[in-house]
Length: 382
Image 1 (cartoon, one colour):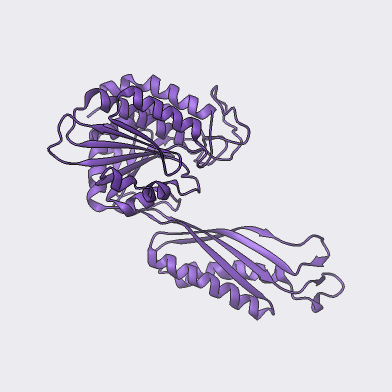
Image 2 (image 1 turned 135 degrees about the horizontal axis):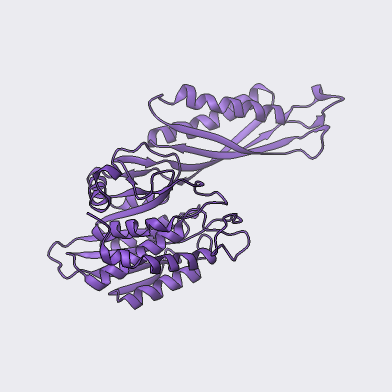
């Protein structure tokens, strides 16, 4: 089945919406302009109900079909926030806000769902109720969790929920998903090492070298993945920050390290959290110092429900054809706060291919407007 004709006719309008959002990126929960435009559009389209302020700055639109015999209420979610990145993409609608950029395509997600909402309100050729969800603060702010905690699922009786994300590197217009884990949990670690300061050149033997201890901890942490985690399961531990010291010839008394942890399995997540603390403390002690690890859980793994993942794949086949849908894609170790919605209700998350180009979160990232019709058609067929 091809892209819905009416949706295809909305392509230019969706692109114009996206370009406007792209020029005016907003971060985390501060998506006031974007949310205001979304709410205004939904009211113009004729949604039966438009509610703002869900999860602080989220927007919800209710669209009832011509029939209600099925009793189905399905949530369709898009994210609205941008990233604190200086744009390097050469596009005529580049960000007007220094240091902010839609480098993950949330402007495109929002435009797609607005297009779907316009089509659904015009036709209402479906049985049940569609809840269009426009979420803030996906990029580290857990806006999905905030919306769920604010009654998103219970207030409108959502029974199933579906999400979508663009994917550079996946061929343009192709879909990919899988039952079970699709994206990893996303957690942070911070390790503080305490030693004894001293002169690095004249008397290193009188100090307890916190830098040396930190280096040994970094090396030892990698043994958790290679020797504690089942080799048939996945985990990533990456230390990305190391701070401490103020002079080239002084051993600092304290250094700190920070990084990220990704897992696909809850038991592996528990194991890794425990072992990071044990390894940091024991390595530091072996070198005469001490260390404490702070582990912060941000987003759980994004785990698709088998039935709903099958529905999502079948709908995608209706839109783009059997050969352009992978329903057993390998999970990705990125994180996504749609996970909180999938913990609250059955549902599925899918990737929509963008073709070649810089990956998400890159300053030269460019959203491919050619896929707007694919995404909106997917939404309306759900």
